[in-house]
Image (cartoon, rainbow, N blue to C red; front, side, top):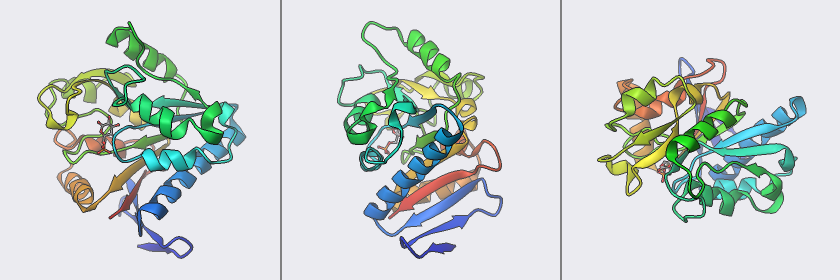
Length: 249
Ligand SMILES: O=C1O[C@H](COP(=O)(O)O)[C@@H](O)[C@H](O)[C@H]1O
């Protein structure tokens, strides 16, 4: 474990470094450390490229990070913001991932970022997937991932009917049907980044909170079975760019 004396955070590199675990002492340090890491990745990209792309997850975990990130001094008008996954809900539905991004990130300095919601009134799910795949032709710089206690990431749920097809899809995004998966809660119809899409993104951050999620992540690593533990898909990618896991108790 390596100490970062300035923040009280520490990080552990896995023996074959497919991930690096950053252990933060509390929620506030976790929030700001993750926001600063995302901003640094975007800033580096904006030095090299005219625009940068950021893909964001929804759920209950990342809101405070997005809020902190909205205050980062960046050329936000050169940043495109897309989604890692979306529930088949309209973008202004309070349970949509788009709503979380709009209310927590696209404020303050980040208000000028260009947002690409996945859903639109009157659009069929296949049309929304096609648009998401068209946007994905532009390589994303950073993806912020979450994980449910069932081991799902994005909208890749263990046991869902479509999992095999989606796990091997050659496209970046796919429509998924997670009927019967408790982790999908009341939104089984979704659009998700696929393992193929995830692996193309150089900077992948996984945000975890609590002992339970850390234990689930460790159980997944131990098992090595991505069908039981879709979170393992987040480990795939450029071996020189391991998944950055940020955790606090
Ligand atoms: O449904 C979803 O859940 C995961 C994890 O959410 P959390 O509430 O456990 O933080 C999230 O990463 C994903 O984007 C979302 O659609």
